[in-house]
Image (cartoon, rainbow, N blue to C red; front, side):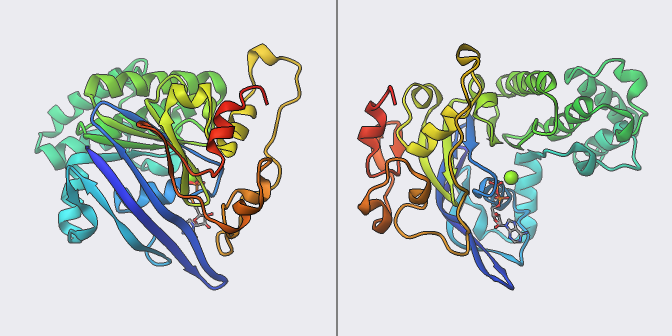
Length: 327
Ligand SMILES: Nc1ncnc2c1ncn2[C@@H]1O[C@H](COP(=O)(O)OP(=O)(O)O)[C@@H](O)[C@H]1O
Ligand SMILES: [Mg+2]
């Protein structure tokens, strides 16, 4: 496994109490594979990713347990300096908001080029040439002319391409893309997603794709991990999960995607709100919103049940959920 997160716990100490943001997350991704991490806002997707990247806000954040193995080495045991080296050489992150991730006072050519100057010891001239190549690779029109432009001179979609180019410049083994298309309109979203998928294959990198939108990952992910209240509630190969979810929360998410073949039908929405992370309900955290909840769900926290060799679900009634196809 390229990256393996094991039983990760992260909490935030705030004036109002302790927010348990990540409560025992385990997931992994191999080289050449894409893991989609799905869940509503506030479910701990970004915090988990920040812990992996070593960019967690600490304090108030605190990693209270678990391991983050990158090529078998536990990053949590490394000193900051060693950690930075591993990160620089092996992993990169793509954020939702390119405008705040890019430096506004440097031309995109200088920003891209700097990566090669600093990390590869290239001359400025060679680095500039590589920057243009990269911009062409992410299909920015007229790259040779636009290399002198500043981030704000590009459209949202083009800026996102530039951030992808930045992330891929040093050919990292692992890329984490945190809602990379959320700020873009739908047609541009699809183009960016296609580009990411294409580059992921070409570079054979491990990709963790974080999203709250199940619709955008169907075609590009291999595995999906669904998060709720800082836990993984279902994990499965993407096609299995689409065909038959084994957790009522996943089913709710699937039912809330607009579908062309269901035109005119009212869109389903999961009722209620995600829990307060300072006061997660006992039993299954999803029970107050779950149409299938019974007494045991309010008292016993479900373990991750093995549904098949490749699948797991944290629902006491995963069998029913799986077989109840025409709900
Ligand atoms: N810097 C922070 N300070 C305090 N609490 C935080 C901070 N970052 C995240 N959290 C807590 O962690 C929860 C999960 O956040 P996050 O991982 O960003 O969710 P998402 O699944 O939307 O990416 C938030 O709802 C919040 O309670
Ligand atoms: Mg997030």
